[in-house]
Each structure stands twice: as structure tokens, then as C-alpha cells.
Amino acid sequence: MANVDGTWDAVVKSPMGEQRSTFTVQSTGDSFTGGMQGQMGALSAENGKVEGDRLTWTMQMTSPFPMTLECHATVQGDSMTGEVKAGAFGSSPLTATRKS
Image (cartoon, rainbow, N blue to C red; front, side, top):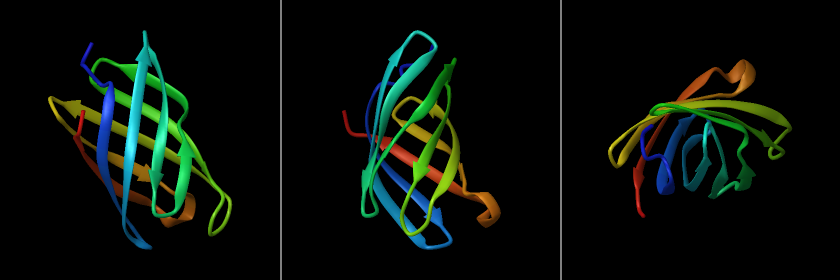
């Protein structure tokens, strides 16, 4: 299993512009907890799963309107790449670099 735990500097290039946040990941077996804290507030990771070096999770966005975000990412060393799917708005690329 990849070392996915840590605090990550994350960027999502969304239709609303570049969204920067701090993404925390704490794994236990094949699941993880954590979330993103950024310009738009705090979002908790829900249903976090770890499969090797791949993470999948959802987040419940409330502002500017309610929406479930479906997320996945792959960890390679201190880098993470993936996507955040925001319903009808489609998928936006996610990149992150481990801070600690």
C-alpha cells in the first residue's frame, strides 16, 4: 500500500477558477478520513477508500450551492493527481504536493 497519509497542498482547477486548499489524509487499512480546508471553507472527506496508491472519496459542498463532489486521486511519492467531479459541471483536475 502506498503511503497516502499526510497534509497536502492541493489545487483544483474548477469552472469557478483555481481552488487552493490543504488536504489532510489519515488512513486506517483500506479507508481514510480527512478533508479539505481552503478558500471556500472546510469539506470533510466521506466514504474515503484506499486501494494501493489510489484514493476515492466524496465531499458535500454547500456553498455556493449544495452538491456532492466525487473525487479520486493517485499518489506517487510526494505528488498526487486526480479529478473532482462536480455534477453537471463535469470533472476538474486535482493536483497536490505533500507538505508533511
